[in-house]
Image (cartoon, rainbow, N blue to C red; front, side, top):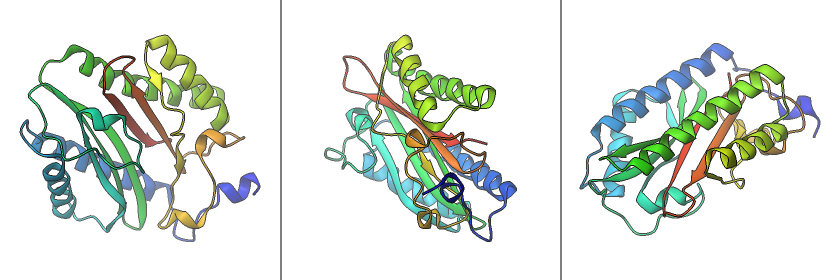
Length: 219
């Protein structure tokens, strides 16, 4: 498939609508994170997130709501959580949302910490920092998707974290994006256009059993 086909959009696609979907998805993220408390089960938090989505008037979910507590923050999207852990007083969790608003796909992920574990806070911060660095590299150099993940791996190592290179970003657009078989952002040989690609960053602590996740639209 050529570059144009990999960056194709549907007849309803509007960049401003993608930005709207992005904003609404982050609004859910922020409201949900404020409701998470130590003692909640991972399953209870997932149900609460779905409640927030309904309250804010989503069109629909386009990928399952994913909430990961503790050691499950090392899991990839398609992997099942181990058990149904309860959030501890000092703990880490992330949320991954794929939601349709106004016919366009929002996709966002972020990591949060409860309590005062210094290394957990550092890991969560590092995922956002690395995302920002890679996004800036995209804006300033017009690098290919593959080059962005090469840069991400180098920066993660320099910052002292392990980057999961089995997670390399993906396409979004007007719903459903699945009709465009574009592959991963990290395998894309050209510079990704704005408003079409999700940059995903998943880090692991080098020795302890937890990680952090951050993703957002390149726009």
